[in-house]
Image 1 (cartoon, rainbow, N blue to C red):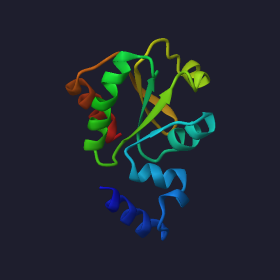
Image 2 (image 1 turned 120 degrees about the vertical axis):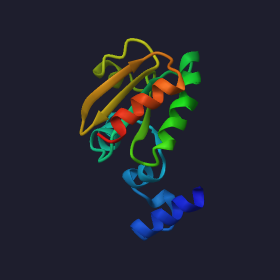
Image 3 (image 1 turned 135 degrees about the vertical axis):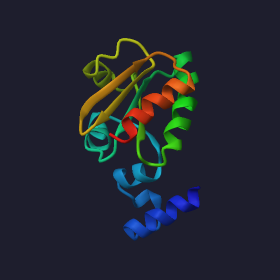
Length: 138
């Protein structure tokens, strides 16, 4: 998988290393990424050409720990039609407040900077798959 990602990166950018790739090029290779700050959120989520599922989580949250592998698996199944952005609410409190996250975990579907849908709480894989499929082709 990793070698394939580097081949795709090299063919599309002419670069050999992932470290020299831009944030959007890295996002194109990886189906998920962690948001570093508000500027990173704007660049990688709001300006994304593909729909984005934003996972608001906390490291101390047990339901979040159970949800993460489920949503990562479902997003990976879509093979780049949708990406997953993970936002730690303790590191990015302002983003959590902007999107009215009162409890975690919260999943928000976005495209072109607009909120399309929201799921709150721990969900089973079937409900996650339905949620992701609804917005993957948006």
